Every structure is written in C-alpha cells, then in structure tokens.
Image (cartoon, rainbow, N blue to C red):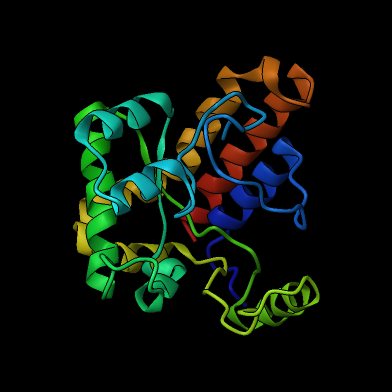
Length: 220
C-alpha cells in the first residue's frame, strides 16, 4: 500500500544487497575510530548519534566542525520525527522544539554548501509501514530497552512524504537532497567497485537495472 512510488524502495533494497547489511545487527558507537565507512569505501555522517550531529549539539568550535565535515564524503539529514525524542530528553538542553531540530538540519545543509559536500535526505528506515513499528518494539523490549514503547517514525516514506517533510528547506532544496540520496548512491556504486562485495559485472548489471527502475517508477 505504500508502493505507489518505488524509487525509495528499490534504492533501499539495492543498498541493503550491495552493502550486505544485517537488519538486526547491533548498533555500534559512531565515531571515526570505528570508521563510519560503508563497504563502498564512502564515509557518511549518519544519524543523531554521529559525530557531526553531536558536535553541533554541543556547539563545538568551527575548527572541529570543519574537520568533521572534511572527513566525511557526504552529509545526512533525517526527518524531524526521527529525533523528536530529544525534545523531552534532559541530556539535550538545547533542543526544546521541533523547530530546534529543523535548525540543526538547516545547519547541516549549509555546511554541505559551504564545504561543497553532498547532503542527502534519508528515512533511516527500520520498518516498511508505520504500523510495523510493533516488530521493532518487540525486538527492543527483548533486548531490555526501557523505551521500547516509544518508537520513532522510522518507516519508509514515499517521494511525496519526503518532499513534504523537508519543505521547510524550500521546495528546490528539498527535491535536491531527496534525489541526491539515490543519484549519489548510483555514482558511488559505479566509482567504488573494488571495495564492494559484488563482482564488477554483477555490480554494473545491478546499477543499470536500479537506474532503469528508478526512472520508471518516478514517472508513475
């Protein structure tokens, strides 16, 4: 029922297949020492637990921000709902509203422009549909998480939903960062073949088919 536009779905499946990601892998601490490096060899700032986001939260000096932005190959922003938990969290005293979360995303977008780094909008998908959060809730409860019942909206959003989500950046910028998510993935798949788990021929076939499907479904 959420498949009117399949570009995001095709991309998600393709990235999972290409990167060999395990859906239930334990979350590791996000830092450079543990290398937020994809199997493609590319480095991404990732979610709110990532170094760049955390540096912005604590008002790190411009020199540190610059070092982090230069370290990564591309910057990532996510829907406000993904980080809404921070509003009620005493550990994040600088976050008191959704507007504060939007402002952090704006800062990341500006950093991308300043340092000429691609900025991509992602859903941080953990389940397909909103109601599927029950499965993640069960898994987290089994792992002992006390906040298992407080699930963020980590579902797969359609193109329309993503453009609406990031409309506060302006319609042109929202479209730019959304399209960057899959166009940049295609580019890195083609440019970093030696670091992938697939053979060159298999990768070329996958990238070609993925590109064709994205174009086809974007026109639905």
